[in-house]
Length: 408
Image (cartoon, rainbow, N blue to C red; front, side):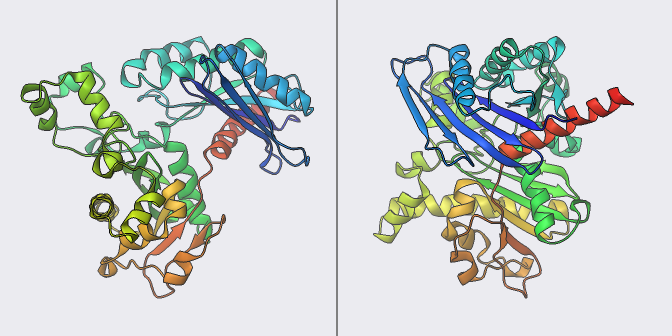
Protein backbone atom coordinates (compact mmCIF):
# COMPACT_ATOMS: atom_id res chain seq x y z
CA UNK A 1 0.00 0.00 0.00
CA UNK A 2 1.75 3.15 -1.24
CA UNK A 3 -0.81 5.77 -0.14
CA UNK A 4 -0.01 6.83 3.42
CA UNK A 5 -2.09 9.93 4.11
CA UNK A 6 -5.20 9.88 6.30
CA UNK A 7 -7.68 12.74 6.54
CA UNK A 8 -9.40 12.77 9.95
CA UNK A 9 -12.81 14.44 10.14
CA UNK A 10 -14.73 15.28 13.31
CA UNK A 11 -18.13 16.64 12.29
CA UNK A 12 -20.20 18.45 14.89
CA UNK A 13 -23.65 19.93 14.52
CA UNK A 14 -22.25 23.26 13.31
CA UNK A 15 -18.55 22.54 12.91
CA UNK A 16 -15.95 20.38 11.18
CA UNK A 17 -12.52 19.78 12.68
CA UNK A 18 -9.95 18.16 10.45
CA UNK A 19 -6.35 17.01 10.30
CA UNK A 20 -4.33 15.49 7.47
CA UNK A 21 -1.61 13.10 8.65
CA UNK A 22 1.12 11.09 6.95
CA UNK A 23 1.29 7.70 8.62
CA UNK A 24 4.87 7.01 7.55
CA UNK A 25 6.02 9.15 10.45
CA UNK A 26 2.70 10.26 12.05
CA UNK A 27 3.41 13.81 10.92
CA UNK A 28 0.68 16.40 10.46
CA UNK A 29 0.49 18.04 7.06
CA UNK A 30 -2.47 20.35 7.76
CA UNK A 31 -5.20 21.00 10.28
CA UNK A 32 -8.15 23.29 10.64
CA UNK A 33 -11.63 24.08 11.84
CA UNK A 34 -14.84 25.22 10.20
CA UNK A 35 -17.26 26.61 12.76
CA UNK A 36 -20.63 28.33 12.92
CA UNK A 37 -21.81 26.39 9.85
CA UNK A 38 -25.25 27.60 8.77
CA UNK A 39 -24.94 30.93 10.56
CA UNK A 40 -24.74 34.37 9.02
CA UNK A 41 -20.95 34.47 9.32
CA UNK A 42 -19.02 31.21 9.42
CA UNK A 43 -15.28 30.86 10.05
CA UNK A 44 -12.72 28.56 8.46
CA UNK A 45 -9.23 28.54 9.91
CA UNK A 46 -6.72 26.42 8.00
CA UNK A 47 -3.15 25.79 9.15
CA UNK A 48 -0.63 24.22 6.77
CA UNK A 49 2.11 22.44 8.72
CA UNK A 50 5.69 21.75 7.82
CA UNK A 51 5.71 24.18 4.88
CA UNK A 52 6.36 27.43 6.71
CA UNK A 53 3.13 28.88 5.29
CA UNK A 54 1.00 31.09 7.50
CA UNK A 55 -2.47 30.03 8.71
CA UNK A 56 -5.31 31.24 6.52
CA UNK A 57 -8.74 32.35 7.66
CA UNK A 58 -12.07 32.87 5.93
CA UNK A 59 -15.04 34.63 7.46
CA UNK A 60 -18.09 34.19 5.24
CA UNK A 61 -21.42 32.35 5.18
CA UNK A 62 -21.00 28.56 4.85
CA UNK A 63 -24.45 27.10 4.44
CA UNK A 64 -23.98 23.43 5.32
CA UNK A 65 -21.49 20.59 5.79
CA UNK A 66 -21.31 19.96 2.04
CA UNK A 67 -20.10 23.51 1.46
CA UNK A 68 -17.81 23.28 4.49
CA UNK A 69 -16.04 20.15 3.27
CA UNK A 70 -15.70 21.57 -0.22
CA UNK A 71 -14.06 24.64 1.35
CA UNK A 72 -11.71 22.38 3.32
CA UNK A 73 -10.86 20.46 0.14
CA UNK A 74 -10.05 23.74 -1.62
CA UNK A 75 -7.73 24.81 1.22
CA UNK A 76 -5.93 21.47 1.12
CA UNK A 77 -5.60 21.70 -2.69
CA UNK A 78 -4.05 25.16 -2.29
CA UNK A 79 -1.24 23.46 -0.37
CA UNK A 80 -0.92 20.60 -2.85
CA UNK A 81 -2.69 18.23 -0.46
CA UNK A 82 -6.05 17.90 -2.17
CA UNK A 83 -8.59 15.13 -1.71
CA UNK A 84 -7.79 13.94 -5.24
CA UNK A 85 -4.20 13.14 -4.26
CA UNK A 86 -3.19 9.50 -4.92
CA UNK A 87 -1.35 9.65 -1.59
CA UNK A 88 -4.65 9.86 0.33
CA UNK A 89 -5.37 6.36 1.61
CA UNK A 90 -8.65 6.93 3.45
CA UNK A 91 -10.80 9.33 5.43
CA UNK A 92 -11.25 8.51 9.12
CA UNK A 93 -14.40 9.78 10.81
CA UNK A 94 -14.96 10.23 14.51
CA UNK A 95 -18.35 8.73 15.37
CA UNK A 96 -19.46 9.23 18.94
CA UNK A 97 -21.82 6.30 19.47
CA UNK A 98 -21.42 2.79 18.08
CA UNK A 99 -23.52 1.01 20.68
CA UNK A 100 -22.68 -2.64 21.22
CA UNK A 101 -22.44 -3.29 17.48
CA UNK A 102 -19.16 -1.57 16.64
CA UNK A 103 -16.21 -2.73 18.70
CA UNK A 104 -13.50 -1.90 16.13
CA UNK A 105 -12.84 0.70 13.43
CA UNK A 106 -15.17 -0.13 10.55
CA UNK A 107 -15.20 0.60 6.81
CA UNK A 108 -18.40 2.50 6.16
CA UNK A 109 -21.08 1.08 3.89
CA UNK A 110 -24.86 1.37 3.73
CA UNK A 111 -25.34 -1.11 6.58
CA UNK A 112 -22.96 0.83 8.84
CA UNK A 113 -24.72 4.09 8.04
CA UNK A 114 -28.08 2.51 8.85
CA UNK A 115 -26.85 1.24 12.23
CA UNK A 116 -25.28 4.60 13.18
CA UNK A 117 -28.60 6.20 12.26
CA UNK A 118 -30.48 3.62 14.37
CA UNK A 119 -28.37 4.70 17.35
CA UNK A 120 -29.44 8.36 17.09
CA UNK A 121 -31.91 8.04 20.04
CA UNK A 122 -28.99 7.31 22.40
CA UNK A 123 -26.76 10.00 20.83
CA UNK A 124 -29.14 12.68 19.51
CA UNK A 125 -26.60 15.51 19.66
CA UNK A 126 -23.68 13.71 18.02
CA UNK A 127 -24.58 10.88 15.65
CA UNK A 128 -26.67 13.02 13.26
CA UNK A 129 -23.77 15.44 12.77
CA UNK A 130 -21.32 12.55 12.38
CA UNK A 131 -23.57 11.04 9.70
CA UNK A 132 -23.80 14.34 7.85
CA UNK A 133 -20.02 14.60 7.68
CA UNK A 134 -19.66 10.99 6.51
CA UNK A 135 -22.25 11.30 3.75
CA UNK A 136 -20.75 14.54 2.53
CA UNK A 137 -17.23 13.06 2.43
CA UNK A 138 -18.50 9.95 0.65
CA UNK A 139 -20.12 12.12 -2.00
CA UNK A 140 -16.85 14.00 -2.53
CA UNK A 141 -14.73 10.82 -2.74
CA UNK A 142 -17.01 7.80 -3.36
CA UNK A 143 -14.02 5.72 -4.47
CA UNK A 144 -12.05 6.23 -1.24
CA UNK A 145 -12.35 4.04 1.87
CA UNK A 146 -14.21 5.86 4.62
CA UNK A 147 -13.66 4.48 8.11
CA UNK A 148 -15.69 5.09 11.26
CA UNK A 149 -13.78 5.13 14.54
CA UNK A 150 -16.19 5.02 17.47
CA UNK A 151 -15.81 6.81 20.81
CA UNK A 152 -17.59 3.93 22.49
CA UNK A 153 -15.58 1.07 20.93
CA UNK A 154 -12.74 0.98 23.47
CA UNK A 155 -15.26 0.51 26.28
CA UNK A 156 -17.13 -2.42 24.72
CA UNK A 157 -14.72 -4.77 26.55
CA UNK A 158 -16.31 -3.90 29.90
CA UNK A 159 -17.78 -6.95 31.65
CA UNK A 160 -21.54 -7.02 32.04
CA UNK A 161 -21.06 -6.41 35.77
CA UNK A 162 -19.70 -2.97 34.91
CA UNK A 163 -21.80 -2.19 31.84
CA UNK A 164 -25.24 -3.13 33.20
CA UNK A 165 -27.39 -0.83 35.28
CA UNK A 166 -29.40 -2.48 38.05
CA UNK A 167 -32.79 -1.92 36.42
CA UNK A 168 -35.29 -4.34 34.90
CA UNK A 169 -33.38 -6.31 32.27
CA UNK A 170 -36.23 -6.42 29.75
CA UNK A 171 -36.71 -2.66 29.91
CA UNK A 172 -32.96 -2.03 29.66
CA UNK A 173 -32.57 -4.29 26.64
CA UNK A 174 -35.64 -2.89 24.87
CA UNK A 175 -34.30 0.66 25.11
CA UNK A 176 -30.57 -0.18 24.86
CA UNK A 177 -29.90 1.23 28.34
CA UNK A 178 -26.40 0.38 29.58
CA UNK A 179 -23.06 2.04 30.23
CA UNK A 180 -21.35 2.70 26.89
CA UNK A 181 -18.62 5.17 27.86
CA UNK A 182 -17.09 7.89 25.70
CA UNK A 183 -13.71 9.53 24.97
CA UNK A 184 -12.68 6.02 23.92
CA UNK A 185 -10.03 7.07 21.41
CA UNK A 186 -8.38 9.20 24.09
CA UNK A 187 -8.46 6.43 26.70
CA UNK A 188 -7.04 3.93 24.19
CA UNK A 189 -4.24 6.26 23.12
CA UNK A 190 -3.30 7.43 26.63
CA UNK A 191 -3.33 3.98 28.23
CA UNK A 192 -1.03 2.68 25.49
CA UNK A 193 1.30 5.70 25.68
CA UNK A 194 1.46 5.37 29.46
CA UNK A 195 2.72 1.81 29.11
CA UNK A 196 5.33 3.03 26.61
CA UNK A 197 6.38 5.75 29.05
CA UNK A 198 6.97 3.07 31.69
CA UNK A 199 8.93 0.97 29.21
CA UNK A 200 6.44 -1.89 29.43
CA UNK A 201 4.00 -3.64 27.12
CA UNK A 202 0.37 -2.46 27.39
CA UNK A 203 -0.79 -5.97 28.27
CA UNK A 204 1.43 -5.88 31.39
CA UNK A 205 0.17 -2.56 32.75
CA UNK A 206 -2.93 -1.51 34.73
CA UNK A 207 -3.76 2.16 34.28
CA UNK A 208 -6.37 4.58 35.57
CA UNK A 209 -6.83 7.19 32.84
CA UNK A 210 -8.27 10.58 33.83
CA UNK A 211 -9.41 12.52 30.76
CA UNK A 212 -10.09 15.95 32.25
CA UNK A 213 -11.32 18.58 29.82
CA UNK A 214 -14.59 20.50 29.70
CA UNK A 215 -16.00 17.01 29.39
CA UNK A 216 -14.32 14.60 31.79
CA UNK A 217 -14.17 10.84 32.16
CA UNK A 218 -12.17 8.17 33.95
CA UNK A 219 -11.40 4.61 32.91
CA UNK A 220 -9.92 1.52 34.48
CA UNK A 221 -7.69 -0.25 31.95
CA UNK A 222 -6.34 -3.70 32.76
CA UNK A 223 -3.63 -4.94 30.42
CA UNK A 224 -4.70 -2.61 27.63
CA UNK A 225 -8.39 -3.54 27.98
CA UNK A 226 -11.05 -1.25 29.46
CA UNK A 227 -12.90 -2.87 32.37
CA UNK A 228 -14.82 0.18 33.64
CA UNK A 229 -15.47 3.80 32.74
CA UNK A 230 -17.29 6.71 34.33
CA UNK A 231 -19.54 7.96 31.51
CA UNK A 232 -22.63 5.87 30.92
CA UNK A 233 -25.58 5.75 28.55
CA UNK A 234 -24.64 9.36 27.75
CA UNK A 235 -21.63 11.56 28.56
CA UNK A 236 -23.53 13.02 31.54
CA UNK A 237 -22.64 10.36 34.12
CA UNK A 238 -19.48 10.34 36.22
CA UNK A 239 -17.05 13.11 37.07
CA UNK A 240 -17.90 16.77 37.69
CA UNK A 241 -17.36 18.54 34.35
CA UNK A 242 -17.34 22.04 32.95
CA UNK A 243 -21.10 22.27 32.49
CA UNK A 244 -22.28 18.71 33.27
CA UNK A 245 -23.24 17.54 36.73
CA UNK A 246 -21.83 14.04 36.55
CA UNK A 247 -23.31 11.62 39.09
CA UNK A 248 -26.56 12.68 40.75
CA UNK A 249 -29.31 10.75 42.53
CA UNK A 250 -31.81 9.91 39.72
CA UNK A 251 -34.60 10.98 42.07
CA UNK A 252 -33.37 14.58 41.65
CA UNK A 253 -35.00 14.48 38.21
CA UNK A 254 -38.36 13.31 39.60
CA UNK A 255 -38.15 15.94 42.33
CA UNK A 256 -37.52 18.72 39.80
CA UNK A 257 -40.44 17.49 37.70
CA UNK A 258 -42.89 17.17 40.58
CA UNK A 259 -41.84 20.00 42.86
CA UNK A 260 -39.95 22.31 40.51
CA UNK A 261 -42.49 21.81 37.69
CA UNK A 262 -39.62 21.53 35.23
CA UNK A 263 -40.00 19.71 31.92
CA UNK A 264 -37.71 16.91 30.78
CA UNK A 265 -36.06 19.28 28.30
CA UNK A 266 -35.47 21.90 31.00
CA UNK A 267 -33.84 19.33 33.27
CA UNK A 268 -31.74 18.08 30.36
CA UNK A 269 -30.42 21.62 29.82
CA UNK A 270 -29.87 22.09 33.56
CA UNK A 271 -27.79 18.93 34.02
CA UNK A 272 -25.86 19.12 30.75
CA UNK A 273 -25.30 22.84 30.25
CA UNK A 274 -25.90 24.66 33.53
CA UNK A 275 -24.31 22.35 36.08
CA UNK A 276 -20.81 21.12 36.88
CA UNK A 277 -18.29 23.87 37.58
CA UNK A 278 -20.48 26.41 35.78
CA UNK A 279 -23.43 25.63 38.01
CA UNK A 280 -21.33 25.67 41.16
CA UNK A 281 -19.41 28.91 40.65
CA UNK A 282 -20.27 30.42 37.27
CA UNK A 283 -16.96 29.46 35.62
CA UNK A 284 -15.92 26.34 33.72
CA UNK A 285 -12.33 27.46 33.05
CA UNK A 286 -10.05 25.89 35.65
CA UNK A 287 -7.51 28.70 35.23
CA UNK A 288 -10.12 31.28 36.18
CA UNK A 289 -11.35 29.16 39.09
CA UNK A 290 -7.80 28.87 40.46
CA UNK A 291 -7.33 32.65 40.07
CA UNK A 292 -10.49 33.25 42.05
CA UNK A 293 -9.38 30.81 44.74
CA UNK A 294 -6.07 32.65 45.06
CA UNK A 295 -8.08 35.83 45.65
CA UNK A 296 -10.06 34.16 48.43
CA UNK A 297 -13.26 33.37 46.52
CA UNK A 298 -15.08 30.75 48.62
CA UNK A 299 -17.58 29.84 45.90
CA UNK A 300 -14.72 28.93 43.56
CA UNK A 301 -12.98 27.04 46.38
CA UNK A 302 -16.08 24.92 47.03
CA UNK A 303 -16.48 24.17 43.31
CA UNK A 304 -12.85 23.04 43.15
CA UNK A 305 -13.22 20.90 46.27
CA UNK A 306 -16.33 19.18 44.89
CA UNK A 307 -14.51 18.54 41.60
CA UNK A 308 -11.55 16.99 43.42
CA UNK A 309 -13.72 14.98 45.82
CA UNK A 310 -15.49 13.27 42.90
CA UNK A 311 -12.16 12.66 41.16
CA UNK A 312 -10.72 10.98 44.25
CA UNK A 313 -13.79 8.77 44.58
CA UNK A 314 -13.24 7.46 41.06
CA UNK A 315 -9.52 6.95 41.60
CA UNK A 316 -10.28 4.92 44.71
CA UNK A 317 -13.07 2.90 43.14
CA UNK A 318 -11.03 2.05 40.04
CA UNK A 319 -8.08 1.13 42.23
CA UNK A 320 -10.41 -1.41 43.86
CA UNK A 321 -11.69 -2.64 40.49
CA UNK A 322 -8.18 -3.19 39.13
CA UNK A 323 -6.67 -4.59 42.31
CA UNK A 324 -3.21 -3.54 41.19
CA UNK A 325 -2.48 -0.13 39.67
CA UNK A 326 0.78 0.62 37.89
CA UNK A 327 0.01 4.17 36.81
CA UNK A 328 -2.48 7.00 36.89
CA UNK A 329 -2.43 9.13 33.74
CA UNK A 330 -3.80 12.69 33.57
CA UNK A 331 -4.74 13.94 30.12
CA UNK A 332 -6.79 16.52 28.14
CA UNK A 333 -6.90 20.26 28.77
CA UNK A 334 -7.22 20.31 32.56
CA UNK A 335 -5.36 17.06 33.14
CA UNK A 336 -2.38 18.18 31.07
CA UNK A 337 -2.17 21.78 32.24
CA UNK A 338 -3.62 22.18 35.75
CA UNK A 339 -0.89 21.19 38.21
CA UNK A 340 -3.08 22.06 41.25
CA UNK A 341 -5.71 19.58 40.09
CA UNK A 342 -3.16 16.78 39.77
CA UNK A 343 -1.66 17.58 43.17
CA UNK A 344 -5.02 17.76 44.92
CA UNK A 345 -6.35 14.60 43.24
CA UNK A 346 -3.67 12.36 44.79
CA UNK A 347 -3.12 14.26 48.05
CA UNK A 348 -3.87 12.00 51.00
CA UNK A 349 -3.64 8.84 48.91
CA UNK A 350 -0.09 8.01 49.96
CA UNK A 351 -1.24 4.72 51.48
CA UNK A 352 -2.28 3.70 47.96
CA UNK A 353 1.26 4.39 46.73
CA UNK A 354 0.33 7.71 45.15
CA UNK A 355 2.29 10.96 45.33
CA UNK A 356 3.46 13.77 43.09
CA UNK A 357 6.80 15.54 43.11
CA UNK A 358 6.11 19.27 43.43
CA UNK A 359 8.87 20.33 41.06
CA UNK A 360 8.06 17.71 38.41
CA UNK A 361 4.35 18.49 38.66
CA UNK A 362 4.90 22.23 38.18
CA UNK A 363 7.16 21.84 35.13
CA UNK A 364 5.36 22.41 31.83
CA UNK A 365 5.96 20.17 28.85
CA UNK A 366 4.14 18.87 25.78
CA UNK A 367 5.78 15.46 26.22
CA UNK A 368 4.54 12.47 28.23
CA UNK A 369 6.22 12.53 31.63
CA UNK A 370 6.18 10.97 35.08
CA UNK A 371 5.52 13.48 37.87
CA UNK A 372 5.68 11.12 40.86
CA UNK A 373 8.80 10.75 43.02
CA UNK A 374 11.03 7.71 42.50
CA UNK A 375 9.87 6.12 45.73
CA UNK A 376 6.18 6.14 44.74
CA UNK A 377 4.76 2.66 44.21
CA UNK A 378 2.37 3.90 41.50
CA UNK A 379 3.57 6.13 38.68
CA UNK A 380 1.61 9.36 38.27
CA UNK A 381 1.96 10.58 34.70
CA UNK A 382 0.89 13.43 32.45
CA UNK A 383 0.24 12.04 28.97
CA UNK A 384 -1.01 14.50 26.32
CA UNK A 385 -3.83 12.91 24.39
CA UNK A 386 -3.98 12.78 20.60
CA UNK A 387 -7.38 11.59 19.47
CA UNK A 388 -6.81 12.59 15.84
CA UNK A 389 -3.62 10.52 15.66
CA UNK A 390 -5.44 7.57 17.26
CA UNK A 391 -8.25 7.83 14.69
CA UNK A 392 -5.69 8.07 11.88
CA UNK A 393 -3.71 5.14 13.26
CA UNK A 394 -6.77 2.91 13.53
CA UNK A 395 -8.01 3.97 10.08
CA UNK A 396 -4.67 3.34 8.39
CA UNK A 397 -4.19 -0.03 10.11
CA UNK A 398 -7.58 -1.21 8.87
CA UNK A 399 -7.19 -0.12 5.24
CA UNK A 400 -3.60 -1.42 5.12
CA UNK A 401 -4.77 -4.80 6.44
CA UNK A 402 -7.55 -5.00 3.87
CA UNK A 403 -5.14 -4.02 1.08
CA UNK A 404 -2.73 -6.75 2.16
CA UNK A 405 -5.55 -9.32 2.22
CA UNK A 406 -6.60 -8.37 -1.32
CA UNK A 407 -3.04 -8.81 -2.53
CA UNK A 408 -2.60 -12.27 -0.99
